[in-house]
Each structure stands twice: as C-alpha cells, then as structure tokens.
Image (cartoon, rainbow, N blue to C red; front, side, top):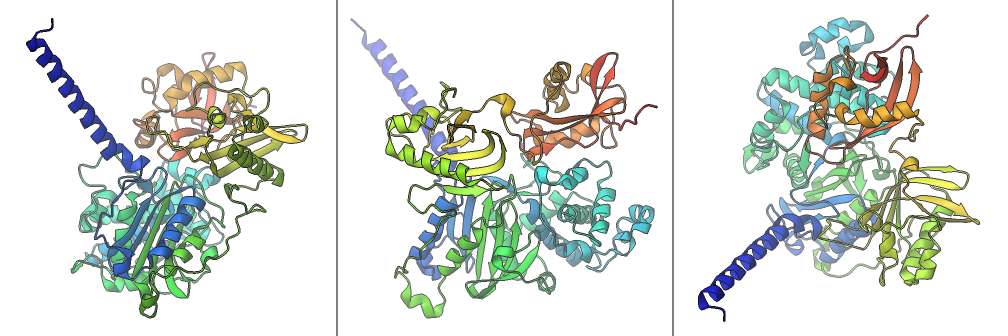
Length: 628
C-alpha cells in the first residue's frame, strides 16, 4: 500500500510538471505564435478604422488582397492622423521581425543628412564631395567626380537591382576601398545608367555622416532619429543585427512607418523638432512624377493614387513607404526582399485598395456601406477559384502554367490516383514530410495550393529545372512550417509535365546564368572540404585550405573574414555553391555564391581563384596572368 507521503510526493511532482508545461506553452505562444499565428496588436497609438474615417469593409478587402495575392509580403501598416489603423503581418513577418531596407536606405539617409545640416556638421546639399573625400577625388579628378556635390547623391534615381542580378553591387561590397569604388559608380552614372548607383550613393552619404560626426552611421541614426521616435533598433545593447554601411539598415515595419509619419509632419514629432521643415520641403521639391505602376525605385517620386497626389519610395523587393498628404495617410509594406519582383507585382493594386478605404469628409456618411465588388481577373487565362496565384521573377511557358493549374485541381479533388499522375514514377517520395510536401498530397485531406512563386527556370529537352516556392494552406506549429516548400524539378513524359524531385546534382542555383559547375573529382573534393573554412564555419581559415599569399579584395584572410562575419555568424545551413570555374593563368577563377547568409545569396568575390600549392588546391584571391 502506497503511503500518504509518497502520494503527496507524486502529487507535488505532477503539479510541478504541469506548471512547467504551462510555462513552456505560454512562452511558445508569446514568442513563437507571433510569427505562426500572427497574434499581433497595434503597437503605437492604436485606433479603430471608423474613428479615423476608414471604411472597415474596404480596408478588409485590401488586407485580404495581401493575404491572397501578395505571397511574399511580410507586413502592411496603415497610419492616419498619427494613429495606427491597421497593423497586419503575414507569413514569416511579425512585430519583432526586421527587414533590410536595401533600396529604401537612401530616403532614410536623406533625413539623416538633414539632421547633420541642422546640427551644422554639414553646410548644405550643394557642398562639394571633395570636402569629405579630398584624397579620393584628388586621385580621380580626371573622371568627372571633382564637380560632384551632396545633391548628386541625394537626388539619385536609377534601376534597382540587388543580389546576384547586380554584379556591380558585389564589386562595391567586396572592394578594398569602398569609397573609391562608389565614387567611380557615381561618376559613371553621369554618362549612363548604373544599377548600383543607389547603393553607392547611400554608402557615400553614410561615410559623410561618419566623418563629420565622428561616430558610426548606426549610432548617429539611433541618437538623433531612432531614439526620439521610440525606435530601439540599433541601440547600444542591440547587437543582433549586422552593422555594415554598404548593406545599410534593417528595421521593423513600424519603425519605417514612424519615419513616414515624421516626414508627413514636416519633421516634427510630438511637438519636438527632429529635422527642419525647410529640409523636408527641399527633399520633396522637384522630385520626378511617375505613374504608380511605373515608379522608379530608390528615392521619392510623386504619383497619383485614386486621384490623390502621393509621395512614394519603393524598393524592388516589395518595400514601400507611401505618404498621401491630403489624407494624412502613411502606408508601409515590407516583403522578403530577397529578389527583385516583376513590375506588375500587385502592389499598385494594393495601394489603390488601401486609399479607396480612406474616406474624405464628403464620404463619411457612406462609411459601412459595402462597395460594389469589382471584377478582378487573375494573371494568365485562369479565373476559377482553384487557380493558384502566380508570382514570377522570370518568364514561364504556358505549358508549365497548365501543369500547376492541373496540379491545383487534382489536389482539390482529393483523388489520390489523380494526384499520383502529377508525379513521375522515379519520383523519390521522402519519408520526412518536412523536406517535401509529396506525402501531404496523398493524405486524406491534402491542402489547397495557394501560390506558385518562380524565380528561375531552365528547360532542356524534356526537363524543367525550377527555383522558387510553393505555398500550401498548411501550418505545422511544431515543425515551424507555414506550408512553404521549395519548387522541385519537372520532367515531361508522354507530353505531360510531372514532378521529378529535388536531386542535388540538378538543383537550379539562384543565379541568372549559372547552374552547378561540372567540376573534376579533385576540384569537387577540394570544394567539399574547403568551402567551410572559406566562410569560417570550421576552424577559422584552416591552413591547408589557403595559399600562403592569400589576398582578396585588397586584403588578407582577416579582412575577408571580418567582411563576411556579420552575415554568417550564428546561421545554420550556410553553403558555398560553385557555379563556374575557368582556367586563368596559373589558377582557376571560381564563380559562385554563399547560400544562407543574412543577405540571402551572397556572391563570391570576382577575383576568387584556386591555385595548386605543393600539389594541393588552395584558395587564392590574386589575379593570375597567363604564363608565356
């Protein structure tokens, strides 16, 4: 017979276990559910739509549009009269998540330059760049940079290309002297369009502020802009984000919205002057006008949204900061920003829907009345409810579209025989459902296919190599999945496309022109063994992986490691992909990229080589000339 003492002991143990379980569940809900279930509240000056003369029905239509038609979106915020009317997060977004501004760094730096002028650290926008970069401009005076002023950097407008599609950006990123390289890009921009000019201008502006203030651009921004606005990002105790001026800022969606509200209030914040009204007027004076669906990115443009003059700063990855002064409205959207979206990416339609929900005085009496639904034709020829949303960063043949449409219909049928027709007989049905969605398709209730996002495609005979993602209406909170899986390759059998799977040797890399390079067995072994040391994964830069005279981007291993460290530290799944290897004198030039960095696909430097030293391949960064 069990004694009372033992019963009490077991009861106490049970209660402790129950309390621990409850605590773990609470932490899970508070920390993780913000990303999984989007349990987000309006954080700053919350207000219901009706109190700010926003039609709730029309606003709901706009929010639903993001959920169903913009699969890469992470957030949407709507401010009116300084109140947060809508704060919505999607997919991997959340109130605590940050996104790289990339192309929107320039509008932020424009504000910081104005603050520096107010503090008499800078004379004004017409001050010549030679006042800040005398050494560099003296050395390169013959290329036209001597006449450049701050205004040239502040007024930059150019196509925005980031990542693998813009080699000029990576030349700036890896340059030993980034100021000289950036000045060269700005100079060339005077005679021709340079896609990297936005990044060069933003970097040079950050260096101007660092020189005149004696502190980093991130500390300056926090002290004079972020802290007064209640933005904690880049505070002294915030060490989670990389601080590289070439990459720029990484902010939460609400932080971007607050900066938009500051500009809408002509530089004032809660009765305090943050930047002069005169400077805000200068920023928006003589900015170019463009149609909404043709607005260039990187800086401010004027456009018209539903009859209202608007100021739009756009990034090609899906970042938007929009001011509508007459309506006292600020709109912010952020996206994954890992790639440039196609021009017709749906954000123009979203902004129109948002502005339609904002009522003027004459329309307040109509608030609550549901507008007549407008017909919306989905991209392509498919208009039925089962058609998935297509988002392309490249052109896709019609027969591939037909495959995905048929696949969506077969899934909805819940007929395993029909679903099986979408898979080639040689398809590898993996046991791990977290690696491939194939097993989900054969479950009693397969999830609906929500969208297909294709970033790269190459078709060779009867095989289609795809890169991108599929989004299913499926959530697994324990595995951290949101129903998103990578695209697999297709094979055409008897005139019909079918899933082939994800064999490693045929995976399409995230490069515009390259696939995995065909390497010799010896070269492949070297890449396998020494890719880790190249990115500092194993013991830092192992001796046998690097030539004794290793030099890259004008410096040795330490400079290269320091340049990469903020973007690779603490990240899992970092891989080096070699996409090309060409003979170059005594060595081989290596092309490729690093997958899994904080920047997405991080391109390898252009002057990276491998060379034989003592009969063994080694990493080398110097350019080699052909032997006579």
